[in-house]
Amino acid sequence: MSAEIINLRMARKKKQRQDKDRSAENNRRKFGRSKAEREAARRRREELESHVDAHLLQKPGLADDDGSSGNDGSA
Image 1: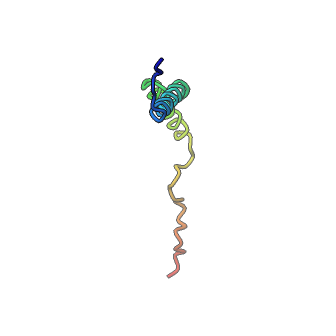
Image 2 (image 1 turned 120 degrees about the vertical axis):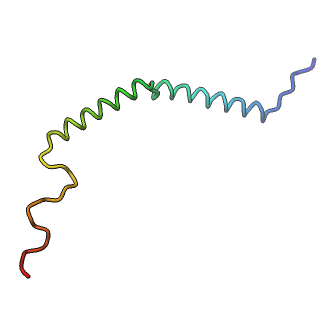
Image 3 (image 1 turned 30 degrees about the horizontal axis):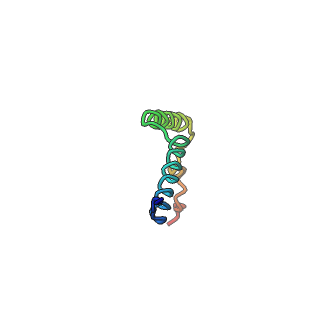
């Protein structure tokens, strides 16, 4: 009548690893995407950005070219 002796610290760590692996598997299922899916999304995003940029009246970050640079011409 000998019972199997277990180390509780090792059993606790083993359970934590199993829980972490299970959580990681669930996250991979929920959030993971294949490389092809990521590339397709990136290409689509770039196409949309270029489409929007093509329809802008003025490019962002460019200064107005109306001659108002702070110099009024009087010397």
